[in-house]
Amino acid sequence: MFNRVRNKLSDFFTEEHMNEVAKGTLLAFGLKVIGAGLAFIFNVIIARLLGAEGVGLFFLALSFTTIGSVIGRLGLDNTLLRFIAIHMAKGEISQVKGVYLLGMTMASIASGTLALLGFWLSPWIAIEIFDKPTLVEPLKWMSLAILPFAILNLQAESLKGLKCIRDALLVQSIGIPIVGILLIFPLTKLGGVEGSIWAYLIATIIVTLLGFSFWLKNTMKLEGKPMLYSLKTLLISCKPLFVTALMNRALLPWAPFYFSWGMG
Image (cartoon, rainbow, N blue to C red):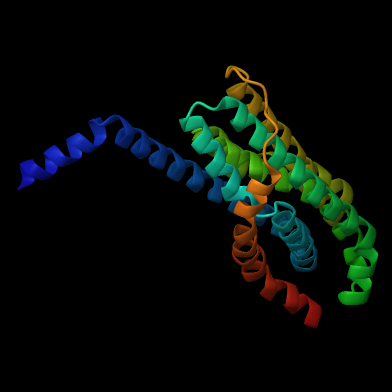
Protein backbone atom coordinates (compact mmCIF):
# COMPACT_ATOMS: atom_id res chain seq x y z
CA MET A 1 0.00 0.00 0.00
CA PHE A 2 2.76 2.39 0.98
CA ASN A 3 4.69 1.61 -2.20
CA ARG A 4 1.62 2.27 -4.33
CA VAL A 5 1.10 5.68 -2.71
CA ARG A 6 4.79 6.50 -3.11
CA ASN A 7 4.72 5.49 -6.79
CA LYS A 8 1.61 7.60 -7.40
CA LEU A 9 3.28 10.63 -5.81
CA SER A 10 6.45 10.00 -7.79
CA ASP A 11 4.46 9.86 -11.04
CA PHE A 12 2.63 13.05 -10.07
CA PHE A 13 5.78 15.09 -9.52
CA THR A 14 7.72 13.69 -12.48
CA GLU A 15 4.95 14.20 -15.05
CA GLU A 16 5.74 17.50 -16.81
CA HIS A 17 2.39 19.31 -16.50
CA MET A 18 1.66 18.05 -12.98
CA ASN A 19 5.13 19.13 -11.90
CA GLU A 20 4.49 22.59 -13.32
CA VAL A 21 1.17 22.83 -11.49
CA ALA A 22 2.72 21.70 -8.21
CA LYS A 23 5.61 24.16 -8.42
CA GLY A 24 3.26 27.01 -9.37
CA THR A 25 0.94 26.19 -6.49
CA LEU A 26 3.76 26.13 -3.94
CA LEU A 27 5.23 29.37 -5.29
CA ALA A 28 1.84 31.10 -5.25
CA PHE A 29 1.13 29.91 -1.71
CA GLY A 30 4.50 31.14 -0.44
CA LEU A 31 4.17 34.56 -2.07
CA LYS A 32 0.56 34.90 -0.86
CA VAL A 33 1.71 34.26 2.71
CA ILE A 34 4.50 36.82 2.37
CA GLY A 35 2.08 39.34 0.87
CA ALA A 36 -0.45 38.82 3.67
CA GLY A 37 2.29 39.30 6.26
CA LEU A 38 3.53 42.50 4.65
CA ALA A 39 -0.02 43.86 4.34
CA PHE A 40 -0.57 43.14 8.04
CA ILE A 41 2.63 44.98 8.96
CA PHE A 42 1.61 47.92 6.75
CA ASN A 43 -1.79 48.12 8.45
CA VAL A 44 -0.23 47.95 11.93
CA ILE A 45 2.16 50.77 11.05
CA ILE A 46 -0.72 52.91 9.80
CA ALA A 47 -2.70 52.26 12.98
CA ARG A 48 0.28 53.19 15.16
CA LEU A 49 1.06 56.35 13.21
CA LEU A 50 -2.47 57.70 12.70
CA GLY A 51 -4.45 56.60 15.73
CA ALA A 52 -8.10 55.51 15.77
CA GLU A 53 -9.60 58.55 14.02
CA GLY A 54 -6.87 58.78 11.39
CA VAL A 55 -6.86 55.08 10.54
CA GLY A 56 -10.66 55.20 10.21
CA LEU A 57 -10.37 57.99 7.66
CA PHE A 58 -7.64 56.09 5.81
CA PHE A 59 -9.62 52.87 5.46
CA LEU A 60 -12.85 54.66 4.62
CA ALA A 61 -11.06 56.40 1.76
CA LEU A 62 -9.44 53.09 0.80
CA SER A 63 -12.88 51.47 0.60
CA PHE A 64 -13.85 53.95 -2.12
CA THR A 65 -10.67 53.16 -4.04
CA THR A 66 -11.25 49.42 -3.75
CA ILE A 67 -14.89 49.61 -4.84
CA GLY A 68 -14.04 52.06 -7.61
CA SER A 69 -11.26 49.84 -8.93
CA VAL A 70 -13.55 46.79 -8.97
CA ILE A 71 -16.12 48.74 -10.98
CA GLY A 72 -13.40 50.17 -13.22
CA ARG A 73 -12.05 46.70 -14.03
CA LEU A 74 -15.44 45.83 -15.60
CA GLY A 75 -15.13 42.16 -14.64
CA LEU A 76 -12.06 41.79 -16.86
CA ASP A 77 -9.90 40.01 -14.26
CA ASN A 78 -10.82 36.43 -15.11
CA THR A 79 -11.61 37.32 -18.71
CA LEU A 80 -8.06 38.50 -19.44
CA LEU A 81 -6.60 35.53 -17.58
CA ARG A 82 -8.76 33.13 -19.57
CA PHE A 83 -8.24 34.56 -23.06
CA ILE A 84 -4.52 35.20 -22.65
CA ALA A 85 -3.98 31.66 -21.36
CA ILE A 86 -6.02 30.15 -24.22
CA HIS A 87 -4.20 32.10 -26.93
CA MET A 88 -0.78 31.45 -25.36
CA ALA A 89 -1.49 27.72 -25.34
CA LYS A 90 -2.27 27.91 -29.07
CA GLY A 91 0.75 30.09 -29.83
CA GLU A 92 -1.48 32.96 -30.98
CA ILE A 93 0.77 35.79 -29.87
CA SER A 94 -1.01 38.54 -31.81
CA GLN A 95 -4.25 37.65 -30.06
CA VAL A 96 -2.48 37.62 -26.68
CA LYS A 97 -1.19 41.14 -27.20
CA GLY A 98 -4.46 42.29 -28.76
CA VAL A 99 -6.70 41.14 -25.90
CA TYR A 100 -4.31 42.64 -23.34
CA LEU A 101 -4.28 45.99 -25.14
CA LEU A 102 -8.07 46.09 -25.50
CA GLY A 103 -8.65 45.07 -21.88
CA MET A 104 -6.25 47.68 -20.55
CA THR A 105 -7.82 50.36 -22.74
CA MET A 106 -11.33 49.53 -21.51
CA ALA A 107 -10.25 49.49 -17.86
CA SER A 108 -8.20 52.68 -18.19
CA ILE A 109 -11.17 54.60 -19.59
CA ALA A 110 -13.62 53.26 -16.99
CA SER A 111 -11.35 53.52 -13.93
CA GLY A 112 -9.89 56.85 -15.05
CA THR A 113 -13.40 58.30 -15.32
CA LEU A 114 -14.26 57.01 -11.84
CA ALA A 115 -11.04 58.47 -10.43
CA LEU A 116 -11.86 61.93 -11.81
CA LEU A 117 -15.44 61.70 -10.54
CA GLY A 118 -14.22 60.68 -7.11
CA PHE A 119 -11.72 63.54 -7.01
CA TRP A 120 -14.37 66.05 -8.09
CA LEU A 121 -17.18 64.74 -5.87
CA SER A 122 -15.08 64.10 -2.75
CA PRO A 123 -16.24 67.28 -0.93
CA TRP A 124 -19.90 66.39 -1.52
CA ILE A 125 -19.40 62.74 -0.46
CA ALA A 126 -17.45 63.64 2.67
CA ILE A 127 -19.72 66.44 3.86
CA GLU A 128 -23.19 65.59 2.56
CA ILE A 129 -23.11 61.80 2.97
CA PHE A 130 -20.78 61.30 5.95
CA ASP A 131 -20.90 64.76 7.53
CA LYS A 132 -17.13 64.58 8.02
CA PRO A 133 -15.21 67.55 6.55
CA THR A 134 -11.94 65.90 7.63
CA LEU A 135 -12.62 63.18 5.04
CA VAL A 136 -12.47 65.56 2.06
CA GLU A 137 -8.70 65.58 1.48
CA PRO A 138 -8.12 61.86 2.21
CA LEU A 139 -10.93 60.91 -0.15
CA LYS A 140 -9.74 63.29 -2.84
CA TRP A 141 -6.20 61.89 -2.87
CA MET A 142 -7.24 58.27 -2.51
CA SER A 143 -9.64 58.58 -5.45
CA LEU A 144 -6.64 59.08 -7.70
CA ALA A 145 -5.46 55.56 -6.80
CA ILE A 146 -8.50 53.99 -8.49
CA LEU A 147 -6.85 54.00 -11.92
CA PRO A 148 -3.44 52.50 -11.04
CA PHE A 149 -4.97 50.02 -8.58
CA ALA A 150 -7.38 48.74 -11.24
CA ILE A 151 -4.65 48.44 -13.84
CA LEU A 152 -2.13 46.65 -11.62
CA ASN A 153 -4.71 43.98 -10.74
CA LEU A 154 -5.44 43.38 -14.42
CA GLN A 155 -1.71 43.26 -15.14
CA ALA A 156 -1.36 40.56 -12.51
CA GLU A 157 -4.14 38.46 -14.05
CA SER A 158 -2.59 38.93 -17.50
CA LEU A 159 0.79 37.76 -16.21
CA LYS A 160 -0.89 34.69 -14.75
CA GLY A 161 -2.17 33.95 -18.24
CA LEU A 162 1.47 33.94 -19.38
CA LYS A 163 2.30 31.55 -16.48
CA CYS A 164 4.45 34.25 -14.88
CA ILE A 165 3.15 33.50 -11.39
CA ARG A 166 6.04 35.09 -9.51
CA ASP A 167 5.77 38.37 -11.42
CA ALA A 168 1.98 38.39 -11.06
CA LEU A 169 2.04 38.00 -7.28
CA LEU A 170 4.85 40.51 -6.85
CA VAL A 171 2.51 43.01 -8.51
CA GLN A 172 -0.75 41.91 -6.90
CA SER A 173 0.20 40.93 -3.35
CA ILE A 174 3.69 42.10 -2.40
CA GLY A 175 4.51 45.31 -4.27
CA ILE A 176 2.17 47.81 -2.58
CA PRO A 177 2.95 46.77 1.03
CA ILE A 178 6.72 46.85 0.44
CA VAL A 179 6.76 50.24 -1.25
CA GLY A 180 4.14 51.55 1.16
CA ILE A 181 6.21 50.55 4.20
CA LEU A 182 9.22 52.38 2.76
CA LEU A 183 7.21 55.58 2.16
CA ILE A 184 4.78 55.60 5.07
CA PHE A 185 7.08 57.00 7.78
CA PRO A 186 8.43 60.11 6.02
CA LEU A 187 5.18 60.99 4.25
CA THR A 188 2.97 60.49 7.31
CA LYS A 189 5.33 62.67 9.31
CA LEU A 190 5.04 65.29 6.56
CA GLY A 191 1.28 65.18 5.94
CA GLY A 192 -0.50 63.11 8.59
CA VAL A 193 -3.46 61.16 7.21
CA GLU A 194 -2.99 62.75 3.78
CA GLY A 195 0.68 61.73 3.90
CA SER A 196 -0.22 58.08 4.49
CA ILE A 197 -2.54 58.25 1.50
CA TRP A 198 0.22 59.82 -0.60
CA ALA A 199 2.36 56.82 0.35
CA TYR A 200 -0.35 54.41 -0.79
CA LEU A 201 -1.01 56.35 -4.01
CA ILE A 202 2.68 56.51 -4.93
CA ALA A 203 3.05 52.81 -4.12
CA THR A 204 0.19 51.87 -6.47
CA ILE A 205 1.68 53.96 -9.28
CA ILE A 206 5.15 52.44 -8.83
CA VAL A 207 3.76 48.89 -8.74
CA THR A 208 1.61 49.58 -11.81
CA LEU A 209 4.73 50.68 -13.71
CA LEU A 210 6.49 47.54 -12.45
CA GLY A 211 3.62 45.47 -13.83
CA PHE A 212 4.01 47.10 -17.24
CA SER A 213 7.74 46.31 -17.19
CA PHE A 214 7.03 42.67 -16.33
CA TRP A 215 4.53 42.41 -19.20
CA LEU A 216 6.97 43.94 -21.68
CA LYS A 217 9.81 41.73 -20.45
CA ASN A 218 7.74 38.59 -20.99
CA THR A 219 6.10 39.53 -24.31
CA MET A 220 8.75 41.47 -26.24
CA LYS A 221 10.55 38.21 -27.01
CA LEU A 222 7.33 36.80 -28.48
CA GLU A 223 6.95 37.54 -32.18
CA GLY A 224 3.71 39.09 -33.34
CA LYS A 225 2.06 42.51 -33.38
CA PRO A 226 -1.15 43.16 -31.43
CA MET A 227 -4.24 42.36 -33.49
CA LEU A 228 -7.54 44.25 -33.29
CA TYR A 229 -9.48 42.14 -30.80
CA SER A 230 -13.26 41.82 -30.68
CA LEU A 231 -14.81 44.18 -28.11
CA LYS A 232 -18.05 42.17 -28.26
CA THR A 233 -16.23 38.98 -27.29
CA LEU A 234 -14.73 40.58 -24.19
CA LEU A 235 -18.00 42.21 -23.15
CA ILE A 236 -19.94 38.93 -23.43
CA SER A 237 -17.34 37.21 -21.25
CA CYS A 238 -16.89 39.86 -18.58
CA LYS A 239 -20.55 40.88 -18.11
CA PRO A 240 -21.53 38.07 -15.68
CA LEU A 241 -18.12 38.20 -14.01
CA PHE A 242 -18.58 41.90 -13.30
CA VAL A 243 -21.62 41.24 -11.11
CA THR A 244 -19.80 38.49 -9.22
CA ALA A 245 -16.71 40.63 -8.70
CA LEU A 246 -18.78 43.58 -7.51
CA MET A 247 -20.48 41.43 -4.88
CA ASN A 248 -17.46 39.44 -3.69
CA ARG A 249 -14.68 42.03 -3.92
CA ALA A 250 -16.50 45.29 -3.23
CA LEU A 251 -19.90 45.15 -1.54
CA LEU A 252 -19.52 42.19 0.82
CA PRO A 253 -16.05 43.13 2.21
CA TRP A 254 -16.63 46.88 2.52
CA ALA A 255 -20.37 47.51 2.93
CA PRO A 256 -20.44 46.97 6.73
CA PHE A 257 -17.53 49.37 7.25
CA TYR A 258 -19.01 51.88 4.82
CA PHE A 259 -22.46 51.97 6.37
CA SER A 260 -21.17 52.01 9.94
CA TRP A 261 -19.39 55.27 9.16
CA GLY A 262 -22.39 56.60 7.30
CA MET A 263 -24.69 55.89 10.25
CA GLY A 264 -22.08 57.30 12.66
